[in-house]
Length: 238
Image (tube, rainbow, N blue to C red; front, side, top):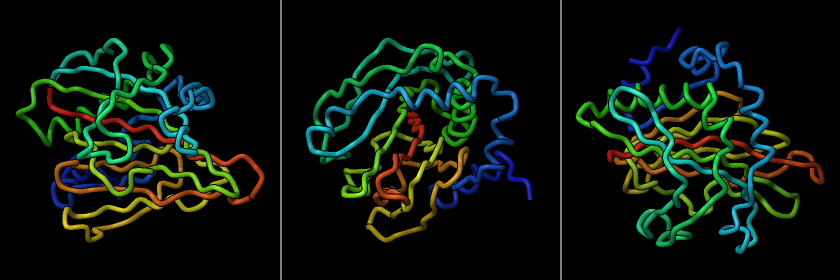
């Protein structure tokens, strides 16, 4: 059965989150029109170190960008600025301004990211029709795993991001096992779980209603490179 944008939004309204498989997302994003998709995926090979985590012995690479949008019209990139979360939402790295390397211009201005951001505005804007202006943050993440040290997609644990809506979009899994996403109610009990295992699979989250986390990842074949690449997009009313 084909899942429509209405079905996806209805699931978020009902559950506070939705999982979309790869065929669904490819259809909703009109993936065959994304001419820069190979370059978009390859850009994860050029992410900078997350020095805030590296100091704690963890291995994560990332880039970051901020966009702004009205309910309609262009989605415009903003000047580089830090990513900030309060300690309420991130007890590991909250309370400080974190500066990351920016998205490469060709990626930030490319067709793939533009379509993903437009899709998010279509979905989240319908869920929050009174919102006239959006503050959007885009994060490219690569979590690396080693035989002796698991990679931690969410080192802060089960959490909220302190925004309105979140998209987590799978780009690539190479030599990785585990990495199960869990969704939780505010009282802590688990509402559901799934694994983003294939490119284009995604989760959409109402950050006011549910918490989320991802279990550590390990290499399937010890000694060989292993990583989990995702794109995270957050929307917050401005």
